[in-house]
Image (cartoon, rainbow, N blue to C red; front, side, top):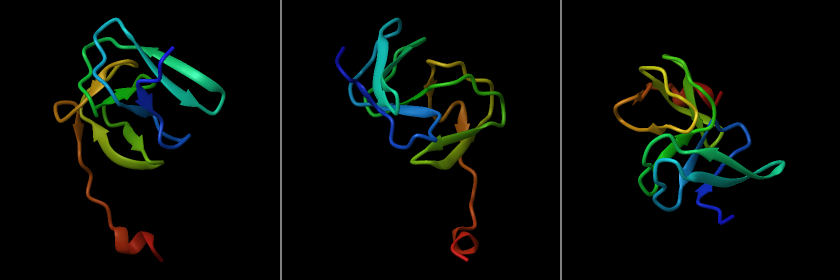
Length: 98
């Protein structure tokens, strides 16, 4: 199996595709326990995110080990995360440095 996605931090609940993945193909990435896969439930464009777990509305999207946004609707494992189902959440970065 050829790796076609990257897990950037073990805490992440998404991976980023490093090539286009078609619906029905496997998203293949390296995790802490070796090579792992997720079935793509829809076409995933190059450099876009795929959910590794089922996410409920309002769940945090974790990439780089940090929250990068929240879901505005349920997202199934294997689905594309994009501007239609994820929104940004402002953070107080200065306060986090204390």
